[in-house]
Length: 369
Image (cartoon, rainbow, N blue to C red; front, side, top):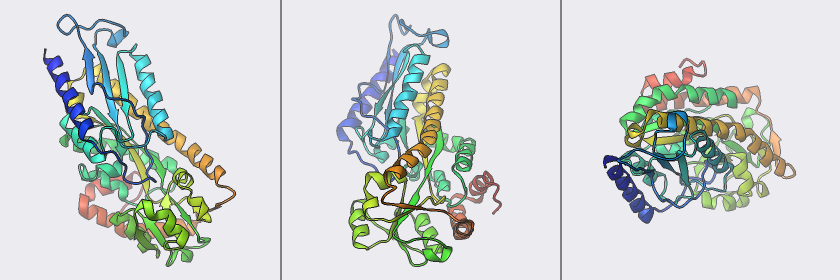
C-alpha cells in the first residue's frame, strides 16, 4: 500500500506540473537533448499480491516491480542528443527484461528548467536532463564550470568535468538531488566577421555573449566588447553590424543560419556546455539498489554518448557551412592570452564559491592558482 500511495502522489505532482508548465530553453546555442512523450506516470509500478511483482525480468530484476521513470527536459527533441538518450533508455529496458523503462518528456512539456528542477527536488519529477548553467540558482557550486580557458582540448575537458563528480555529489545531495550523469559536451565556439590571425585582432571586437558576468568579463579582459543580447535579436544584429561576433556551438551556428551573416569560425576552448542528468534524491533513495545502479548507468552512458557525438556533430555542421565560413586556427599565442584573460575570473569564481572547489577544478587540468 505504501508503494501505491507513493506512486499516486508522484503521478499527481506530474499532472499538476504538466498543467501549469510553460516550456522553454535559456539559449538556442545551448546544446542538450530530449524527446517528447506524453507523461502517464512519473515513477509508476505495477504490483500484485500485496506488492510482489509478476512478469518479465531476469536475474537481479526478476523479483522487482515494473517501473517507468519520467526523464523531463526543456530542450528540443529535434536535437541529436535526444536520440542518444532514447538509445540509452532502450538499452536499460533490454538489460532489465522490460522491467525498468524511461519515458522521455522533452520540449518543455513539463515545464522550463526552473520548474523541472524544483519539481525534481520535490520528488514529483524523478529525473531531469539539462545543462549545468540551468542549475546555478539551485546548486551554485556548478558555477565552477564558468571558470574559462581551463582546458586546451575536448578530451581534457571531459576528464576534468568527470573528475568533479565526487566533489559535487554530496553538495547535490544536500539540495535533494542525485547526479546520475555529468559530462563535458562541447565548447562554445566563436563566429565572427573579423579575420582573427593574432591576439591583437580581438581588440575592440563587439561580441554577443550570454548575460553571464564571467563570460562577459572574459571577453572584456581579452580586449573585446562583450554585448549581452537577446538570442531572438542576434541574427538581425549580426546582419546589421551591431555586433561583429557571437559565441555558440557550430551546430547552433548552422541551425540558426548565422553563416549567412558571418565569415569566420574559431573553436575557442574557453566556455563549456556541461550536460547533466539529475534525479530526485527522494525517488532515488526509495528504489531497489539494482534499479539505482541502472539509473547511474543510464546517466553515465548518456553523457558519454553526448560527448562522443559532439565532435561528429561539429564536423557535420562545419562541412555544411564550408562554402560560407572560413575556419580559423587557435594559435599558441591566443591560448596563452586566453589563460591570461581567464585568471582574474578564476579568482572571482573562487570569491563566490570558495577557494577549495575552484582549486580542485583547476587541479584537474594541472593548474595551480
